[in-house]
Amino acid sequence: MKNETCAGGKHSKVRVTVLLCCNMDGSDRQRLFFIGKSAKPRCFRDLYTVPVRYRSNTKAWMTKALFAEWLVELDQQMAAKGRKILLLLDNCSAHCVNPRLTSVELLHLPPNITAKVQPLDMGIIANFKVCYKRRVIERLLLNLEPNPATPDPQRLRISLAMAVQMMYCAWNEVKQTTIRNCFVKAGVFALDENTTIRGDDNNATEELQAAWDRLDATDVDFQDFLSAEDRVVSHEEVSDEQLVREVRVELRRRTSKCAARDGRHS
Image (cartoon, rainbow, N blue to C red; front, side, top):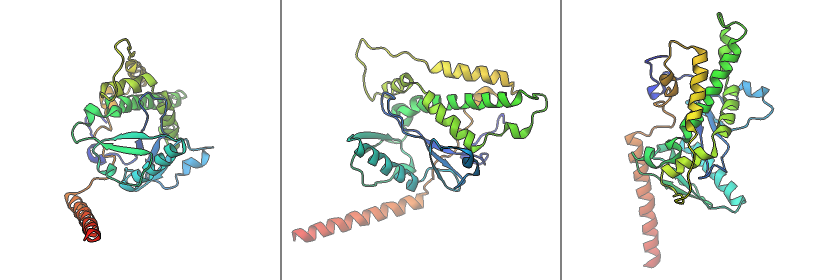
């Protein structure tokens, strides 16, 4: 609602977390990695196929275990194709994993610069959200048509299955020019002097604005709707105590490794 925030996710009882991954020119978009709360959502029974990779935990957060699982699957996929890739990761505690990988090299970006050098944060995620939210509004408008004055609350609900389908379509709707633009802005690669890229991100926002105006939601501001989930926690948070424990474990591991190596050379 207007003037309410989702800081810490406390206002968000029904929620999901989605992982996006793509290459520089948008020709390879990984299947969405979708994290919900229910292990076996009943609404999935009506789907012929679930078009995303679905996992769950009680908070619908990205965790180290889930991220490591996704990384291993990505590595296996790249190995099967004979490809070697560099994966850019922001400074998120859930990304601090080190599985054995052969075809994926990880580059962890320094803290506090994600918005400047992470291509997905340069506009790819924002464009994906705009495409998804436009589909949500269009679905609500469709369901309001029979009786807009006194709508049936059940017809205004967006089920998990609906969200999955709409996010799947929204991810495919993000244009390759949008993706490439964001990689260019992040400085990941440079264009030839004679090459220009047409910006088309504004069209998606304008289409969402038009759908929003038709909905006539007077109790919520459009900008609030656009940024509703910006401060929602989407990954497990590591406490200082846990960080200290992990550092000590790593120090002991490296110390014992050095001691064993010294022993072999004695």
